[in-house]
Length: 346
Image (cartoon, rainbow, N blue to C red; front, side, top):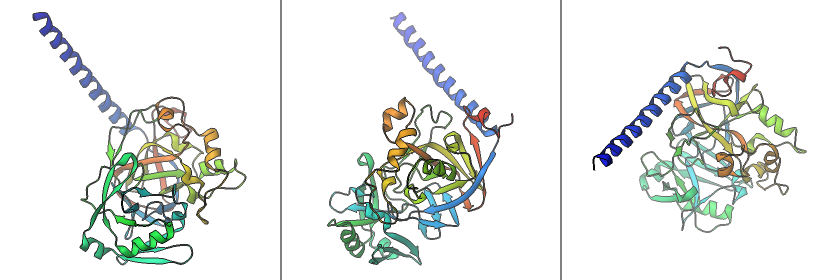
């Protein structure tokens, strides 16, 4: 019996030692990263906000960036989502590519949605809040995220455009129940990223997606027909960087705002939708080209994402703040890349 108790004590001591070791290691890494230099790598070329998930985005001069995503005036990024009224399953351009040509704007408390052929609908958001009709959207992995139903006029408009009966529009407001959360996992790509969970309204993977113009230019050199930036739906587009430099970023700092890079943005058939016609490219470009040279390296990321190529970086907020076009972009590099960058100085 004594031996058994001794073994238990020993196992407990070993377990506690491992926890303490990992805690100290994380703390030291955190302090080291905070002391690493901020390097100027480029400027903000463009900013975008997408009020309705999968619909057309708005190019804006400035954004307020908070924990839930980008805000421009009355427009909140991915605040609205289109769902099947019976099942709650969400619609995106993957199933309904025509969604990317639905223009969306929010002014004076009114959401206006306009299809490419001129059909439109207006939704009074104060009325939506007053009715307080809560419905559930079912997203990836059947995760639940509640929203306020935006009424029958919006439903009729979307049912007509998407050619799907009983289509509904939901609006997320803070305080509603959601199972959406972006949790960092330890992989070779983001080994420096601290454990954290970022919340979103209806965005896929993270509150922010950051891209570089240089990487888009590199891709377009490989294509017979250039791909417009609208195919990739970034929130922040950075200019004057080296191509694929975003793979190396640990954090991004613009003005008063700071962003934690979480993981690569893994691409799907959304990139094949023409942003003007709302139709998918029959040759599956530029996704096919990206798959030829931008798949994740062998390991956990490839096992999880398989043939989905990496393009851009998903990010969460560290420090909320305002950003605008033309500002200098500073980054901290991940430790494995820090000495390899030409800007590095010990």
